[in-house]
Amino acid sequence: MSDEIARFAGLKDPNVASVLGEVHRASKGDKWVFLRALPSGLGALLTGKPFMDGITPHLANAFIGVPDEVGRLLYLTARSIDAQQAIEFGTSFGISALYLASAMRANGGHFIGTEIEPRKVSVARDYLAHAGLSDWSDIREGNAMETLCSLKAPIDIVLLDGWKDLYLPVLKLLTPKLRPGAVVFADNIYTFKKALAPYVAHVRAEGSGFESTTLPLGSGIEMSVYRPDLQADEKLA
View 1 (spheres, rainbow, N blue to C red):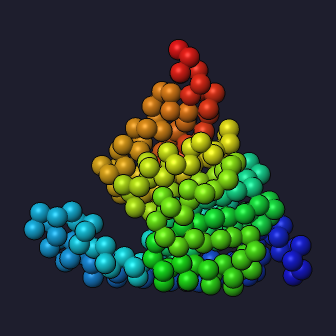
View 2 (spheres, one colour):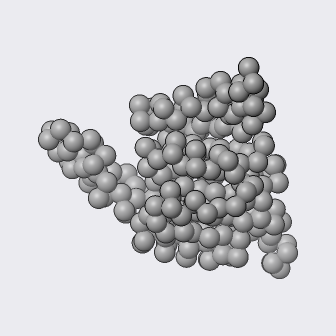
């Protein structure tokens, strides 16, 4: 398959499809990671610490990726709005990166992901390379509040899938660079309902500049469309 044909084949490109199949099969091992992490999480609770503090050391080996149905939603949304710049907070081993980078190749755009775990950065880059998507993607290593601060506008689509307490700060960091009509997805809304309540409240608040709803896919994904006209109207009211 030529590079030009592969570009427009999107998720049907054999290289992309093969790597996606590989990572989704590998991600099934997450259940064993979480089972091994459970005692540490319970131990943290018994000492008055948050559950996540106990299991965090184990998560370096977990994919914690989006299911195929969410990945395809990301891909199709990016394609439908002709996104030229896709941003991800919390790339992990790169499952969602493959979907977004595939859309960026088809659109002639670019994907930028950020991940704090060095090993995950390396593996995600390898997956993208094997899928033939390296030229349309960049995985930045480090704290998202630092790695994403230098992004240039406009940003067309965003996926938030890292540490839950950073969803809102990252969104506020990126909001000035969002183009009107940009789409922001936030994963794990059902799983971390309490932790993500401030984020959900923000994107649904009048005057926030967003219209938002929770989609019943995977572990719940909040889909928000940036409407700066609503934000401006609220300020004038």
